[in-house]
Amino acid sequence: MLDRTSVLTLSCPDRPGIVAAVSTLLFESGCNILDAQQYDDTETGHFFMRVVFARLDDAQPQAAIAAGIQALAQRFAMTINLSEQATKKRVLLLVSKFDHCLADLIYRWRIGELPMEIVGIVSNHERAAIASTDIGDIPFHHLPVTRQTKMEQEAEIWRIVQETQTDLVVLARYMQILSDGLSAKLAGRCINIHHSFLPGFKGAKPYHQAHERGVKLIGATAHYVTPDLDEGPIIEQDVERISHRDTPDDLVRKGRDIERRVLARAVSHHLEDRIVLNGKKTVVFTG
Image 1 (cartoon, rainbow, N blue to C red):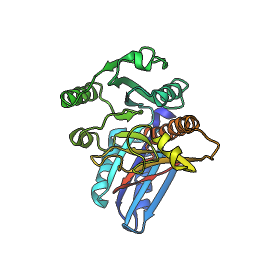
Image 2 (cartoon, helix red, strand yellow):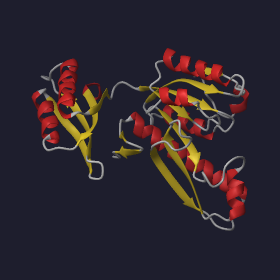
Image 3 (tube, rainbow, N blue to C red):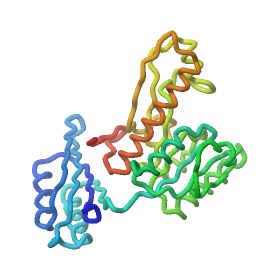
Image 4 (cartoon, rainbow, N blue to C red):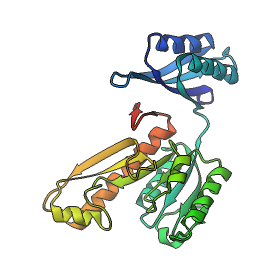
């Protein structure tokens, strides 16, 4: 059934008849709706929907169904995305020295939890810097960066993205700021993870800074990358309570765990086409 299953996500100005039009089109095309979720943002007047449907034996060809959906999109001024579940998204992972998120994503990929195809790993450090992570035969690209070579390095990253037909770029603790130009090129398909202390505790050793201030909650945020540093549409967040008994090392250890699970959930949501952009926010249709 997976090779006959597709996911449609859409957003458009709200008006009567949208759900009926979508369901009627799929029915008349010979499709069976397996799951449907919708959200009406009354503040913005926009409607959002995610539909999982399967083509039955007598269904129209996928191209004809896609054409029908495109005509519907024009009628309702929809922004749409249509994907087939059998087609795995191609993912490029960027990492620096902290490889806990990288290792976690690779593990989840290997056990089949994250249905993706990893097309490569890019790091501004040599492979030895992430030696604790078994990357197997995944292509590794060492692209060192300095202030003088940053634009050349980003041009190479963009070349890799195009050459590998990358669908999603994941900054798995990649400690370099992407330029406005590259951020714009990757709009809606580049996910970053960072600790929750921003903007209060910037720079080196944020967990140590937080410990000195006696914070009681630590957390992490996964978001889409935009030219506005760490201010892109938020996809996933989590927190964990700590106490005066926790040392800076405890905060770092717990922070790693939160970062891993938050990033993994955000990547999973993107791979399953559960995210629809809503201005500076996201609508996430969780299961």
